[in-house]
Image (cartoon, rainbow, N blue to C red; front, side, top):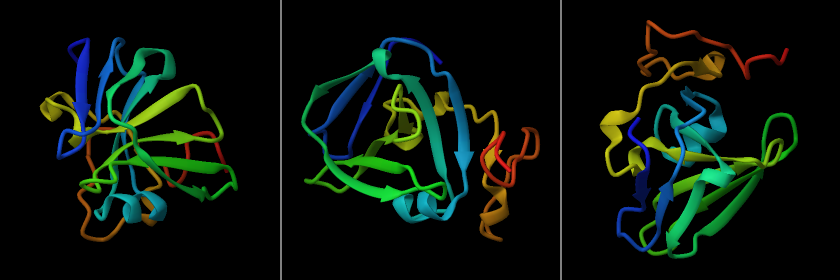
Amino acid sequence: MNVPFTGGCACGAIRYRCSGAPIYMGNCHCRDCQQATGSAYFPCVLVKESDFALESGEPSWFERPADKGHPMHRAFCSACGSPVFLVNGANTTGRALYAGGLDDPSQYRPSREIYVASAQPWALIHPDVPHDDGMPGRR
């Protein structure tokens, strides 16, 4: 992915810039992400918190516990409703961006599919990347 890269919400009220390369890109099929996106999965671009900066706007927040009990803090635009990023309470050193909010989403390259055990039967699973029934490393 070209660095720096930018993105934001649909109406432009919230804008961000990332000064470093993503540390992970992958699709999450958990029910929480399905509900948060209104779709089959969350195409996630994970960046270091230190590489992420809000350039304009202040998101609204929705918090919900993840399957392991830690909070998932989801940032969204209160004007247009677009999901913008999330902060995983289990590891707050990253920002998980929604690939659709990137100014150039064509740069998104998923490297893994997670929570495929809860994937919808109509979801297309990338055939050439590793798949995990849950979170990698957890049983």
